[in-house]
Each structure stands twice: as structure tokens, then as C-alpha cells.
Image (cartoon, rainbow, N blue to C red; front, side, top):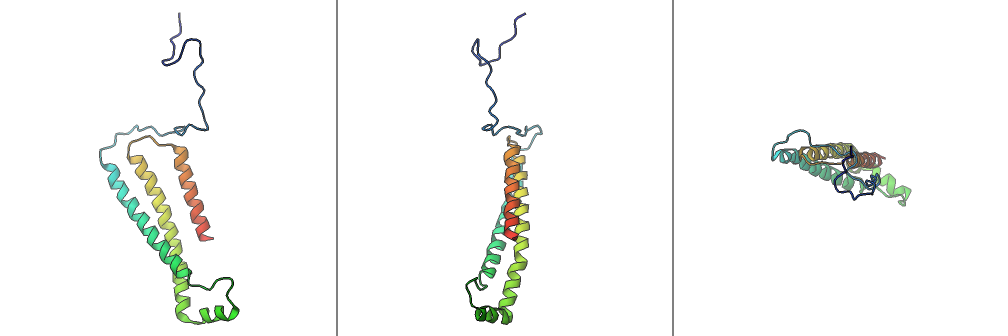
Length: 144
């Protein structure tokens, strides 16, 4: 009995080999569950809010910490900066706001993944995990 030929292949040719390096759909999620139209908009709103909260907290913390003396400041400038109670308060406030900015960024990353899942379209788990890993590395470097 003759074997059925795969569709799209020429007689006498082998089927194409999968390209694992360039196949972005490798390990792609199948849209198995039925998703109602417009549900992704409800998931996108918290992601947008978390992104805005991260941006505001990050720039606030960066502004407060940018007021500190640089490495090329003299000893007298550093002592004068920290002797003032207002400057010390602003520096501590900037240091306390930065962890909340990092937490808001991680929350934003997770909400982006959730929004991608609720669209019902296929997405690559490889790229999704890469996005999460780079976000975690960014937050770790931010804290250092």
C-alpha cells in the first residue's frame, strides 16, 4: 500500500528540517481556551497603570538620589551635604522609593505576560520567559 505524501512536498524530496534557532514559535502556547472578545482590554488597563506607577516612582527616586554629591566631590562638600537634615531626608526618601519602583516594574512585567495570554493569540514561551528574565536582571541591577 502506498504511503500518503505530505501536503506541499515535491515527489522525491525530504520534508524540511525544523529550524530551532529561528523558529520563534518553538514552544508556542496554543490558544486552547476560548477567550471572549475584549477581555484583553481589561487585562491591559492594570498593566498600563503599573507601568505608569513604575515610571513615576523611578523618576522620583532618581531625581532624589541625583542630588547627592558625586565621587569627585571634596570631603568638605560631602560633610556639608550630609550635615544638613533636609538633604539627608531627601536622600533617604529616594532610597526608600527605589524598591517600590522595582516591585512596580516586576508587577508590570507579570501583567504584560497576562495580557499576552488573554489575547487568545499564540505567543512564544521562549520569548515570554526571556522577557521576564531580563526584567528580573534589570531590577537586580537597579537595586545594586
